[in-house]
Image (cartoon, rainbow, N blue to C red; front, side, top):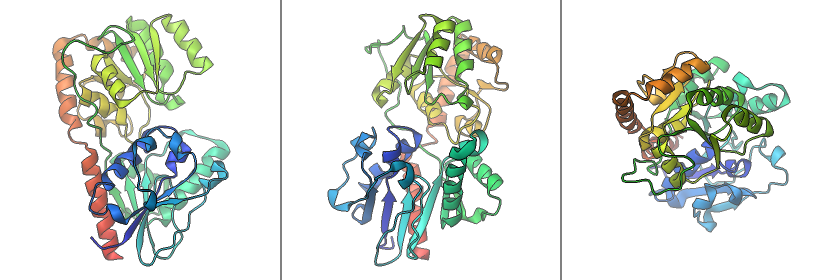
Length: 361
């Protein structure tokens, strides 16, 4: 590989405590640290990064960390950092920033277009200004799914498609089938609860999930940020004592919950990728999801995709899973499908991209 330095901007670790982008960045850094190019990596790091659950798991060499000030995260996140280097170098930010140096070869990863589709007001304007600027200034753009690439060309038709590569995310080996009698302390009996994992923003359609589970007679286990007062009132009204909030959990704990769930219910209207879908499949947990955005691309051929996002349709799919033959077929297909996506593959493709960009200058 051309002996150029790779500067990785860890700003995401100071912007969120956990989340999909933090997972992606953590999996990339973990592999780079054990690669032949490890000594040529430099990490731009900001205060409060240690509060990120994934950053805590990384042992970054102190000598390769470039400490950056972060007086005001709300402002700093929109400013492009300067880097001093002797020759051409890769600059890859974890969240929509570029380096203005003439020697920088900027790489931008685009995760989704949620703001463009669903948000409004000043917050949307600031986000889109930063993202679109980073995309247009990048020497190369990485999209995490083919659907995200199509969205990019829809919202920014002036971008040259030749500058875009689709590099799918992976799924951790922490997710796998467990054998034997459950030893974990489960919120409900095995096979008697439905999982809802991740964000509960409006496009995730959490109320649909709550109402459908309420009608099914099953229980609901929620993984993610704490329930709001409105959400708490909703689940209490619809489910009474048939729900449990598990909190933000480790991969090991989430794997246990996937293994013993009736299914993962993922009625999201939009995903840039949808990592929980693959986590569940890899753990042997059936997935009911929406036939929308990137989900069909990621989940593969599944009889449990919702053609219409209605409570009645979700209830029908929950009932179908009582057919043991169908259930086993879905589990077998899911485990086979999940093998298409690995973090090693993602890392290998990014490393090849870095090599090509450095060689071409």
